[in-house]
Structure formats: structure tokens, C-alpha cells
Amino acid sequence: MRWQGREESSNVEDRRGMRVPGGGRGLGIGGAILLLAFVLITGKDPRALLQLISQVQDAVPESSAPPAGAPTDELGQFASVVLKDTESTWGAIFSSGGGGGYQAPTMVLFSQAVRSACGTASSAVGPFYCPSDRKVYLDLSFFDELSHRFGAPGDFAQAYVIAHEVGHHVQNLLGISDQIHSAQQRAHGESEVNALSVRLELQADCLAGVWANHTKIELEAGDVEEGLRAAAAIGDDRLQKLGQDEVQPESWTHGSSEQRVHWLRQGLRSGDPNSCKT
Ligand SMILES: [Zn+2]
Image 1 (spheres, rainbow, N blue to C red):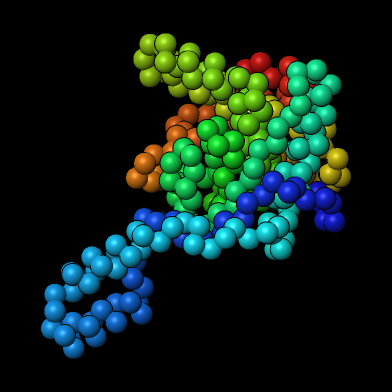
Image 2: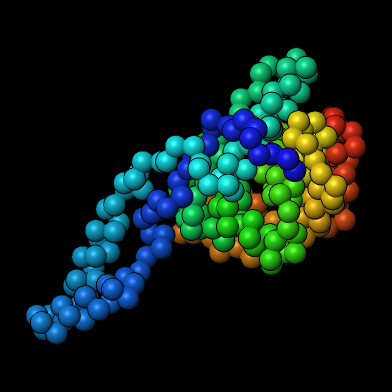
């Protein structure tokens, strides 16, 4: 993708490097040495000190460091350019559909752990969209994982991941997510609930394809194949270690690799969100 130099989104919250209470707890080697020195010098029970440290850590608000401005690193800028492009694409589609304007989501870049309106999540959950605060949460180290662990390298594969999460935002705006969730509440049994989740996920893949059809970012040879490879490689059932209060975003169910590739292709070919009737 020839994305360099293109306009970046102003809807990016860069929270990388910010600590979340309860996330990334640990003394480190320096702390352990200090603790040992404390015990040796005072002869006191180290548990009291550990408890104190833990209380102090809990008291540190997440916003102890203000979110940084626009990303200055290459990967952050890339994500920001892709987000901007989804804003233009969906803005145009929404206004041509006559169904009101498109309200862009915010993209939160984080490292290790993040607090959202849907709960606290560690990076292990992968990228996710929280409908309650209308934000896409993304730890950019997921792209390393995508490349090395899932064998799906390339910038278009990364853009597809962002476009899929923006697809969930579009579903939220159109009221589709709500419809699915109320259908899930009426559903009988887990398999019916899961089948509805699969349809929602596959539709987000299709909407990512719709974006790719309309993108103004110039694609290069092999880009689309990268995206299809990523669709086949990642499932929302990737190993999840959930935080204390659980985030339920890219939850247990997605669809088979073939289904994901099929629906991404469908959106890519048609460029029409109405064709995404999963
Ligand atoms: Zn999803």
C-alpha cells in the first residue's frame, strides 16, 4: 500500500506507554533488590511493604500521563492514515445512502493493557471494538503477531484488521449489533447464540472488503492476497486471556477460514454494504 504522506485521522488516542491499574503489576528486579535491602536493614515483614506498594499502584490513575498527540512512529502513522481513509469511505457511503451522516469512531492505541467502557482488557484479547464508547482498541504489537505467529505479514493485512473493527462500528451505527444482541437474548442454547456471533463477524469482514473496494490508498501487487491470507489466518477465537472484568469483543466465535475469505471477497467485489447480508 502506498500510504506514506497521506492525511492522518484526528480521531486517534495514543495511550501507549500508559499504565493501567492492575495491569502489568510487578516489582521488577530493582524493586526486588530494594525490598531485600528493606528486610535486611529493618528486619520487618516484607508483606506489609508489598501491600503498601500495591495500594500505591492501585491509586495511580490511568490518566497519570496525558494521551500523546498524533503518533510520530511509522506504525502509529500507518494506523492513523488507514483510519482516516475508512472515515472518508464510510462518510461517502453513508451520505449517498441518505441515512444520515457517518460518525467516525475513535481509535485507541495502547500497549499491554487498556481500560474501555467494556472493561479492562490486556493485549492478549487482540484488537476489539467497544460499542459503548464507540472506540476501536488496538495494540500495534498485534501486527507482529499477525506476521510471525499467524503467517500473515504485510500492511494490507494490517489495514484489513483495522477495517474489520471499523466494520463493527458501522454495524453499531446501523443498529445491527443491537438487533443481533437482542436476538441472542431470545436465542435457545449456546449454538444459536454463537451462530449469530459468527454472522456478525463475517459481516464485519464483508464491510472491511467494502472499504477495500473504495479505498483511495493506492494498492500494490499482492496487497489483496495479504488481506485474504490474514482473514484465513486469524479467528476471533485466538487465545484469549481476559482481564478481571471481562471484555466481550472479538469473542469466541467467528467463522471458518473459508467463510471469512468468502465474505471479505464479497465486500471487495461488490463495494456495496447491502451485499453483506451474512
Ligand atoms: Zn470482529
